View 1 (cartoon, rainbow, N blue to C red):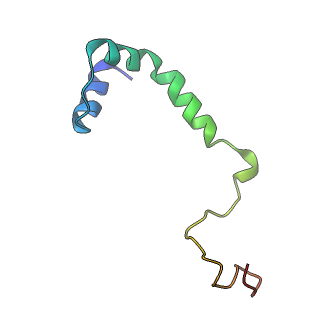
View 2 (cartoon, rainbow, N blue to C red):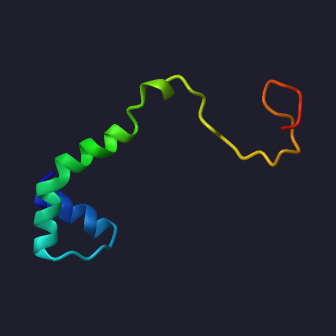
Length: 68
């Protein structure tokens, strides 16, 4: 990501940054992006159902008809 793009994003978020900080973000962006993407690249979880809500234990557990 380029420094001008970083300035736009920081400005939109109203986050202050010094020139060295902006240069550092630009220099490290590709590495950081790859590291974040790797967090979501878990083959075993590819077909898992997402958790869409919190259950207190008083409702029936999904698919069992029993309280967990």
